[in-house]
Length: 269
Image (cartoon, rainbow, N blue to C red; front, top):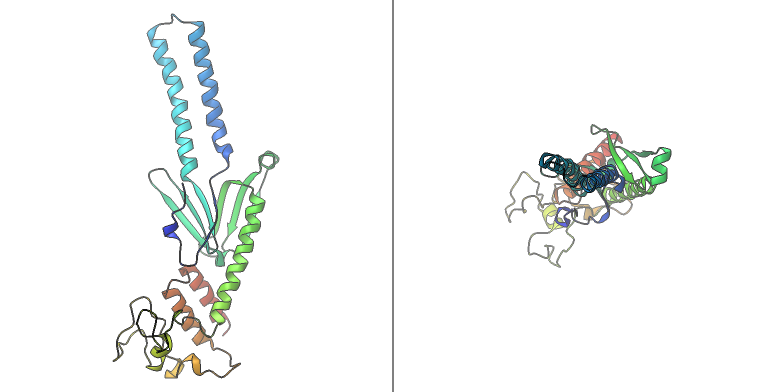
């Protein structure tokens, strides 16, 4: 079952989408074939068998066929998705279960393979987040070594991208400012809001920022905007926290990424 693109966050790209290894269907498929072959042999050998024998043979065929059908539906509705921001696990035919892990929180990825699993190019993947979520275990993973390398690379890229954003002096500013200091939609721009001394708890005299979209915060101690910063001046932890909050509010960061970067910034104090 394809992962709905409408569930992707802004600037999020789908990298890998996989179902469990095909071998999960091997046992029910072989069982169905063997039983069906046996039933056909009995019917051919005893064409005049009593009616109750026919019903018994029919039941013997229906049960493994239903088992195979359920196994196939489970296979199709179980997915492992990796994007450039997170890992998503989904399963369930009628009652659905889903979980996700931000790539920023991935500490380590390991896999287990027996000799038989190596021959089939499958294994069990262990993804350690190091937090309250603990370890995510993904069984029946095809090509686990390749998936391990991919996740570790994407996790490092995501952490680097988030760190660069957190240290950017223009983090949280409007992407499409107009020459008058407002936004392309006709609203009030980031620098304009800072100059008026707005914060999220106060309605300014010249208008109000849109709910959930405002990157405007008052400077530390009520000072001016970051535009007035001297070249080379280091951004304070308080200002970086404000920008981190703004990026989370406008949807550029997930909640897990926000908490992770916040903890790193507070740890520097």
